Length: 246
Ligand code: CA
View 1 (cartoon, rainbow, N blue to C red):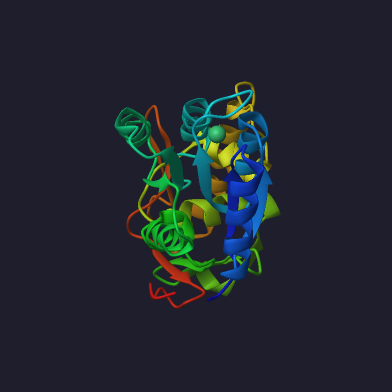
View 2: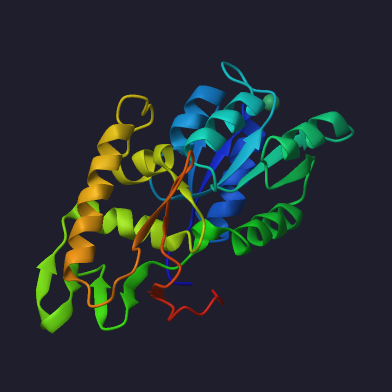
C-alpha cells in the first residue's frame, strides 16, 4: 500500500470506540477518534482523512446532522454509519443522506474491516497522489509544482495552485464544490465568505495554464451552481502509474 489511510471513529460508547480504534490500528490504519458529534465533525474535516465511521445516536450533534454537514463540505468523503440492529429506518435514512454503507452493532472485527476495505476500494478519495497532469506536450508536474509548457519553458506554480490542481485531478472526472476546495486546500470549514476567493484563484490559475499550454484546451471547467472539475482532455498520472490495484 502506497500510504497509510486515516479513519475517523465517531462513537460515544467508550468500549466500542476503543475496540474499533484498536482493530483499525492493528489492520494498519491511522485513526482519529471522537466521542460526540461536534468533535467528530471537526475530526472528519481534517485534511487527509479517508473514511469516517459514524455512530448515529451521539451527544451534541447526532450522526445524521454530522452526515448532512459533511455532505455539504466533503461530498465524496466515504462514511459508514454504525447502527443498532433492527433499526431499519435509521439505515435507510442514513443511506439516503449520503452514507456509503452501514454496519450493524454488534459487529465483528472481520465484518467491519471488510466493509471499510470495500468502501475505500470504490472511493474516489482513495486515489493515489497525482504526479502529473498533461495534455499534448504540456505537463504540470505536481511534485515540483511547475508547468513544463510550450518551448520547454518552466513556470512555477504556487503551493495553492498545485493543491487545487491535485485536488481536482484526484477526483478524476467528478465535480468538486467550492466548499470542498476550501476545506481540502485551505483547511477552512465555514466558507460562506470565502468562496469568492476560490473563484479568483481559479481564474488566475486558468489564465496561467492557458497562456503556457501548447494546446488550446479547458484545464478547469466550471460546473454551474456546483463547482469545478478538471477538463476531460487532460491525462492524469498517479503514483501507482494510474493502476487501480492498491
Ligand atoms: Ca451512541
